[in-house]
Image (cartoon, rainbow, N blue to C red):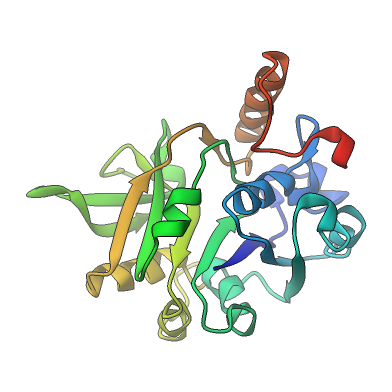
Length: 253
């Protein structure tokens, strides 16, 4: 399985911080934000990784990540997203890198201490979405559960004004290689983007989507509030003396 980290965008919700660098290189306590999704993949046994970035600060990743060996990455590639075309468009740039393999996709502003290695090992086909309960599901893709079978999702709604559940689609997904064919069927949304929610709904229509709830802490870091919340969690974790197998020690960086 290949790993893909989507770390493009201008990070406009975090201006003026992102006038200086890419959002995904801002600090989450004592680590660059991008280290957290890298650790999620590497600790799940995924060490062939592509990072999709964009914007005026894309070159900053090379100085921070180099070839990735110091972070447990055996093979690291980069792709450049030229426009703000959406998450699904960014993922489409990875088709040749995937080379027919399954892919584990994570957004570059996701931080979690969950161990997904079992899910990676047991994955066979279709799509697996990782969900988390949140207090603000209207900020995310939000699942609609089948009232007759609560274990089944019948639709994903993108940033609904009236969320149908308290769950968020976290930005961590496992897909088989048909994901690239689904992306090819998409038309831009009202935002002018190719939406990953539409990809997930294609899997639902084909009865090929499963979900699981992340077992552990999860937070995005795309707003000032969530950036602070994520940093506070990891600071408290370090202060408690927890050995951090789920992030990199400062001596390695």
